[in-house]
Amino acid sequence: MANYFFTIDEAQENVQWLAETFKGIGPLRKQASTLHDEIRLLVDRMGGNGGRKSHDHLVKLNNDMQEVSSQIEQVVDSISQRGILVKSVDPGLVDFPYNREGHEVYLCWKEGEDQIRYWHNIESGFAGRKPI
Image (cartoon, rainbow, N blue to C red; front, side):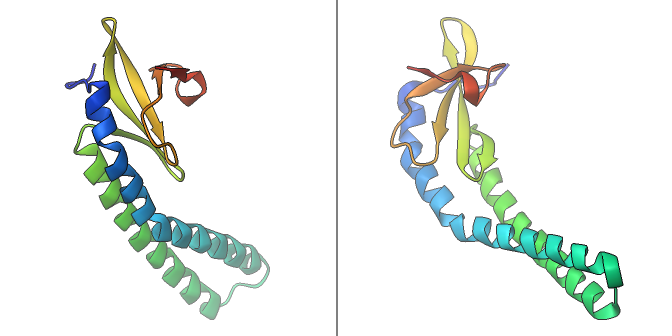
């Protein structure tokens, strides 16, 4: 059970900050996606004919990916410190613990939405979203 339950108004007060936060990590998400594709392609090519140069490039790409991932993780931590549960980074998807008629549920916000409009049971997740 959550230590803290948000009110709808409290959750709503975080929406603009969340939108800006996820927009701010947009370049990092894009960079991570590009690095992922480059790593996969290089690994596929190396399967046939390795080589020191390819290995060195793979090490660099993996280091770059680790750095980008670390930066994204810092942003996720800043969101979590507010008691908000991050469910996805791309697209941004978060839940706010909420007490609905004596039961713990989640208020749900997805990047691109301008306000808190949905809630769902803990077990049902995003697929079970219902209008507030």
